[in-house]
Image 1 (tube, one colour):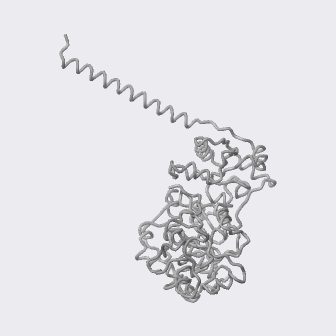
Image 2: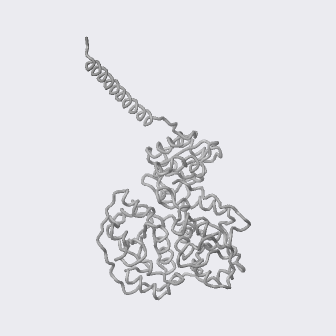
Image 3: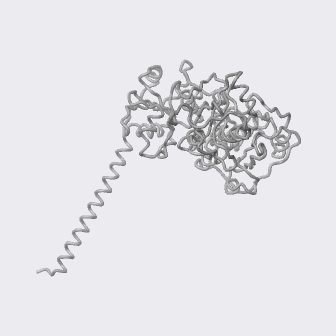
Length: 467
């Protein structure tokens, strides 16, 4: 007869064995599920079908590539750059970066309609599979097209590039440039790379911690000054740029942890007359994710003797409030606020050094972010610039049209430079920047101010909620 101790021992062993077997079975089942997910099949369409469906309103094409290639850069193996006319964008780089609870609405907000047949395309089949699976899981009718090279070879097939797509470059382009390779849209080999942030290099924490190998620090004080934080006088800017080694005919590539800083300096350099200025889309994060080299040593630029003639380009800048008022009357100029909704309706000034809240009378809200330091409405889940066409669609609902004469502004000029750069890419040259912004406007007691949302309007949906 077995003892109580022996019985317990036997039962325990059986339980352990059972649990072990169950665990093993679960593990096998999990692997089987993973394998099943990896082998999900999607129907692929031919180039002949793609050419036909591109003209059919019942189909939506979704480009899953890097922004640069959608915008206009020619990808290796393709005859042309840009995207299939009418294609929407959902980059494979966004997979895993959107909150699961917000994914369905985020995809819908991109214009991807469940009533349509969806075709995802890329030159990388893994990218199309990733996005196709995500859409299939959301119950979309999705197919794959992986022969974009064939589509691009036929000149009768429309592929669209932004007029100035080259202003926004990706990490691969910049890496090729630093490696001495030929890169698209650039013949000038005389270039400099700058990390942009406020303050001297001794206070530039991001730069001192890690920066692109060979990059210099650009102090935003070199191009603007208080108390209004407008662009500094031409001679001051010229001298500072010469100290930084920048001439008007040198290619300048900018990046910053806050992309509005890079956009602000791009605007200032264009105002000064620098002919070729680029922004690294996604900044240092994109560079590091590509596993490209960084360093922490401080690089000191070599001073040059002559920048060239400072253009003081009035074609892209309105510097004073009185000029804004005059143009609002004589040219029907539309003034577009790139400030948070709380700033726009007058609940906060947004800055501790700006005492008054409100907006210039007649200002239209043009989207921004949750506060004065945020521009989340303008960025994608991977930190790159949002598709300008999406912003143009939002602006249109606000009464802002491509052919309008318009001026973006914010508090002091940083945030407004982001949409200005987008309009530059799209070739909307009648859109400028009102440099003085709310800071300068609120300094004059005589200028008309609006408080509260005009006509009690509700805050418009930016259609970009992914966090």
